[in-house]
Length: 320
Image (tube, rainbow, N blue to C red):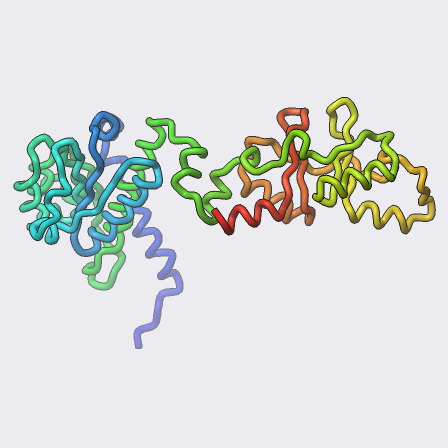
């Protein structure tokens, strides 16, 4: 058995990077801008087509466009001639993915779509037949696939996917796609926690448990029990002075200076961790886990506007 080069993985990654590095050299900013303008102005959807490995790349690019709110579909070039050709309308943009640029199925597809349809080709050969038939050509240059005998498409697959994803990301920037928009299209799981803001889940107004520094032990216990969060904020003229949790109460009861006449300011934890209302739920979860706490006061600059509980964040991630 032939011994393996210890730096084989590093060499492979370098090969991929070389292919990716060719993309900005092959494509001008003006070209990207013109394609994005077409995507924005066209009233239809984006249809992406490819076969083999390029087909998998096309499906990934379509899903990225969908993530950014642009209607996108994948069309298999063979299935197109068995009933799916009607998917492509004159108001649509067709994106063809082909490393060689000579894929017969795609060339046949171009001869049978409405003439009004805008055509973009992503290819490793900008002098190919597909490139000649396309309105726009996005290219990359890959000399080494990084595979044995340079046969299996590897570097070219990564490069083509990068071009497509960059195109989708550029579109999102131009249309000012926001975190709120992203959350709308990703209502489930971890990505939604990154997209949704703290303000969407925090308790606010009368639901915020709060007492003053001079509040009695009885008053703060009543507030904590009534709001059912196991915590209360300590505010003075709207400014956060501290926080009191169930744990703070238990520790106070065990202290040698315990007294039933004690005020909130004697029991509270000063300078508690907090978070801005515009931060993501993922950022809030990171703080809660790092600090090993269950609640976060929510701020708008220096003003208290809400409170966020760990259990609500976890439930939101599971159910949305």
